[in-house]
Structures are given as structure tokens and as C-alpha cells.
Length: 476
Image (cartoon, rainbow, N blue to C red; front, side):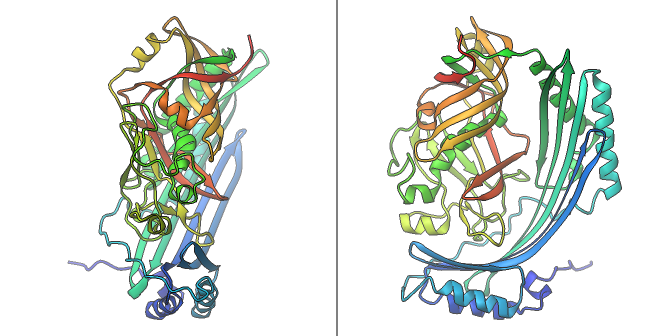
């Protein structure tokens, strides 16, 4: 039997003894509450095939570390793109200045786990460069052949492999290898001088193979083309207050933005969230249960451990309409007298960790989407949401619908364009009148921004009926 080959740590690869790095961290943390040495090596590539040709092919690699010292509300952080003993030593001295005479009680380190949510695949290694370009060419040709109204096709592939290591007190080293891939197809159709578009994509934490089989990429082409052709026949959306039925899956992005950010620990610790100090209160309609779960195998927002080394978990945030929890990193959890939930995330080694969502969604109910539509006299069926804006302090949102239809006398009728949903997350949660039995996750395309940092996320929900939302469009 052949023994498994254990890859050298990022520290060892850089010629730094892990014991020495651990000693420098220990010295910096004397009198502090918490802290860690976070190391990272990432490689990524992206291909964009647009207008019948390879428009761009990019490769990027980065390596570095960040050292953090936490003292009460304060965090000292120093980072560098050079992993070396002198650089770590300088960072330790700089970050330790955050203490300034502070004498805290060292927080207990995260529990260990042997559980892995994804493999060590390297999306950059397979398929080969030429095969990826050939695939995009094939997607382009297939999409153009599907319908004579196809005017433009843009297909893209993006892959990343990120190796992270976290050194904690006592010299403990936590390692995670994180693959991530995504395939996107965007199609523009034209008829009688009018152009409309549709888009579809999918991905997750694995190699490319799961998403680039012919049946899989053809699904993306067909969905993007279907959306584009629907929009080609759309008419302006009427404006006004009406009942709205949301389709399942990706539309969980509204929940993510309008409610999810308000349930992150730092906003509640600082009292800036509309949900601050409301644990145990009813904040949503009965039946509404909202969760965050970073422990789902292979999903885009999942992590075996978060960026402080805490294993991820399923956290119930709202249960049957009652607020029962927040998403926590170690600092906010300690200051609020709660437990970390494995939600500390950072964009890279150059960024401080903060409480962030992973895969956030609402659990399903018992109603069917057909029942929701049949019960609506006048309203809007939003099949797919696009971009939106949210004010975190009050949850007010504006979201565009990329595919939407009128509901008239209990039936879906004309497709409409220019529809926007306007409201606020807390009120919208109380206006949920029907919850669907068709719970679904998004296909793996989400990116979340917070404080200038972007991280991959997942969203999920069943179909929902929300009473009395303001729909922006064309006044009639």
C-alpha cells in the first residue's frame, strides 16, 4: 500500500519553519483576545468568447499572508505578498500595536474537523487551455444555430484554486484547498430592430467536468435563449402596488440582500441593523424560516472552515417568523456573548475577516406556484431577478426583474420589461402570504459585496407570494 503524499505547507514552501511562525504569532497575541496568521496561495483563469472570437484569456496568481491581533473592539492587521520570517515578524509587531496595554482573555480556538465539503481539484489543470477555448467556440456555434434571431453570443469560463492555511495559538495549522468554477452564457436576439438579452450560468466548488458536459452547457444555452426570446415579446410593465409572486432559486438574492446582511453579527453588535436587539421577536410572517448554511457539499458559498478556522454549519436565523440568531465571526460573537457560527470570510489575505453569508435561503412550504398565481387577481410574476440596491440600516431595496410577467385574473399573461420591485426587507417578510413547495438553490453564480470585499455565495428559496409590494415600471 502506497502512503499518501502530504503537500508541504505554504510556510514550508516559502522556507519558513511553522514552529517559528507560530512563536511569532504567540508573542503578538500576549494580552490579546484573539488572532491568527492567515496564509493564502491562489491561481485563477478566465476565458471570454464574444462576438465569434476569443476576446480575452487571463491568468492570475497571488500569494501572501495576513496577521491579525484582536483586542476588544479593535483589530490590528498587517499583510504582505512575501511569505518570509522577517515579513511575518514585522507584521506581528505592527498588528500587536492594537493592544496598547490591553490585557484580554484569550478566546478558545475553533474546534477541529476532518470533514471536507469538496475535493482538491485544480480547475486550471483540466481541461487543457486549448480544450476550454474549443468548448467556448462550440457553445457559440450551437447558440447561433439554434435561432436565426440570435445576434450575439458571449460565453465565459472562470476557474480558481485557492489554498489557505491558518496558524492559530499553540502552533495548530488548519489547511483548506478550495476549487471554484463557473460557466456563463449570454445571448442577444434581434427582431425588427429591437434587441433583447438573456443570461444563464452555473458553477460550484469542483472541477469543470460537472458543468461542461454537452447536456449541461446546452442547458445554459437553451435557458439564455429562452429568456432573450421572452424579453423580445415583452411590453412595458405597469407601475403601482400589487401582489408579487417570486419564482424559486436565484430569486433568493432578494432575501440575501434585503434581509441577510441585516442578520450579520457586526451590524447587530454595532446597532446599525434594523434587526439589532430583536432576538425573540416576530420579524416575519408565520412559516418563514431563514437559514445560512456553509456546510453544503460542493456549493458555491460553502467552506469546510471559515477564514478564522471555524468549521461552517447550518444556522437558523429566523424560525417560523421569529428572529432566533445572527451570523457570527469570532470577534462579534465574543462581544455579544454568543458562539461563532463559521461565517468569518475575507476576500483575500490582504483583507480583514468579517461576518458574511455563505449559502442563505428560506425553507419551503406547502403551496404550489400555480396556486399562488391562481389566487392573484392583479399582480406580477417575477421569474428571475437581476441586480439591486439595498440600504442595510433599514432594509429598503430596489430590484430589477430580468424576466417578469403580468398576472391577470389568476393567470400569467404578457411578459413585461422594466419591472422593478421596491420595498424594504423587514416589511416584505411580514407580507409573505404563501410559501411554495418548490424549494431550490441558485445554479451557482452568486457574488456578494460588503465593505469593498467580494466573496462567492449561494442563495435559495421556494416560490413566494408577497402582498402589496410597490412595482416600478411605466405609469398607466
